Amino acid sequence: MPSVADVLRQYGPEYLRRYGATMPAEHKKVLQAIMACRTGELGTVLYQCASCGHTHALGRSCGNRHCPSCQQDKTKAWLQTQTDRLLPCPYFLLTFTVPAELRGWIRSHQRLAYATLFEASSAAIKVLAADPKYVGAADCGFFGVLHTWGRALDYHPHVHYVVPGGGLSRDGQEWLPSQAHFFVPVRALSIIFRAKFRDALDRAGVLAEVDPAVWRHDWVVHSQAVGDGRASLKYLAPYVFRVAITDRRIVSCDQGKVTFSYRKSGSNRWRKMTVEGSEFVRRFLQHVLPSGFQKVRHYGFFSAHSGVALELVRWLITVCLGLVFVLRSQVLREAAGADRPEIRCVVCGGPVRVVGFAPNTSAIPFDTSETMIPGSPAPGLFRSTSAHRRRSRVRAAVAQRRFEGSPRPTNAPASGPTERFPVRAGRVATPRQHRPLGS
Image (cartoon, rainbow, N blue to C red; front, side, top):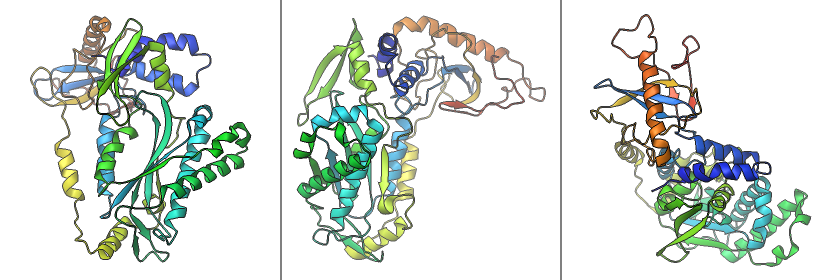
């Protein structure tokens, strides 16, 4: 079954040829990075088995935040970190959406519009949370995640917020809880959100570019009680380090068309949609974020700039709600570490280590589907199109011979590996006093 990267490699070059002159530079950068990811165009990472000494070659990953193959481990790490930061109180999931008539303008002004979406929605939460009729908190903490796609890859920008049910008093010495199943009224929240969004566009001098009818429509805000917050984090985690679609939803990619599966909102039945290859590329690229844009933002005492320690907030909640405080972070961290996969040698099953990096010296496509190590942390690592497999094996053999035949440092034992190069996904640190392998 093809992956998202396979689809982009097949239809991306034609898309660049037809629309490259008018595409945003960031879209071209992302498309080219994913197309080159783990193909050998970015160079080859060399591994050596600690047991049998066999060497293996693996194309370098692109490290782009929009690449579906490079973000798997980051999702687990983020989920673990946020789970450790949960407070012992009820949580709510708030979702802020914009009218369909405004989405076209947002799509063409993404940096400004996304920042305004965060600014207006977070301010609306703070206003109502400070109202004594609901919470009366002078300082409430929460974080939001920007999400721009619908289930069929359509453009649907909105922000999800994970909000503890309560906040701190003005002197910061008391926890003021909300109701267990009600935080603030969504009708009032949507009105404030719309007004603040309009005011922000007016200050930016772009209000006249938006259809005035948008401000007469009702804006939808949804609020849901989510218990202790763990379920909401598990729901949001894939959106933080994934763009639009996962590899497992790609059904087929042939004859100029792409078929993928999806589910309609409110239904558990999987359906299939078939689109032209260029249309799939377009739908994927419209969810590429502006360069450097922060899609996860923390507010109040969850912010890194807050002077309030989370441990103090936990103890205030414990005193207020009469709970038993449990230190669970270390237990969860150890459990997460136990599930981390380990790279193994395909020959003997022993552990492998990085020993060097061979830069790309030709334009021969390279793929690692049949040359590298099963059990890699990145799912989909060994998938490839059949057209590249023969050249992939040739490229892997060439890289391996270069590694085995390259000169060793004079102080190294005859049977030992060459000097090791520190390698991380997406970048390589090469010692200046030693030339790169394969040069």
